[in-house]
Length: 161
Image 1 (spheres, one colour):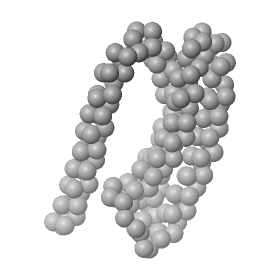
Image 2: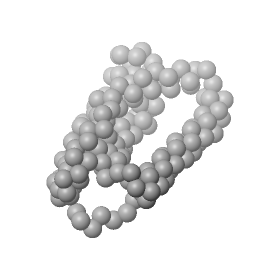
Image 3: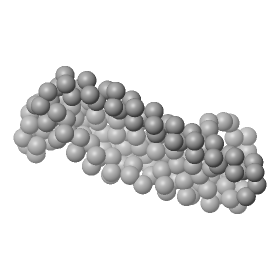
Image 4: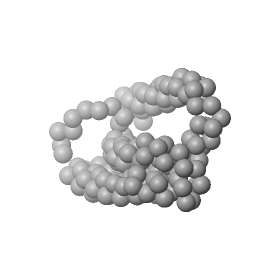
């Protein structure tokens, strides 16, 4: 491996490690006060709703970044940049449709899920707050896979597309 590629690889890894660290710090910074504010009952609602949210994420975007990355990198390796972009557009279409459907089911079905399935009436509000995040995470997963497929985590314009 050339020195330039090795430095680029290290830089990409450093960027990913730094963003993961920042994300964990932000999660810690908000989680402690939110836990104190919500109390035991609020944390119970949050815990139940988070299980539904995780299931919805798994249905819409669990392996999406990996699949997009693999498909894009295969096309980039052979110089098929337009086809790599077509993979991106197809995956984005899938993410919007699947994420949109599951988001709508969770948002509009929050009353049924909260009262009939979870037996926690007040969790309907938490479900409705988290529902749009399902679509956002699916959408961002496609972008993550696209940039990983190109072998970069730095946003820049690709002139060959």
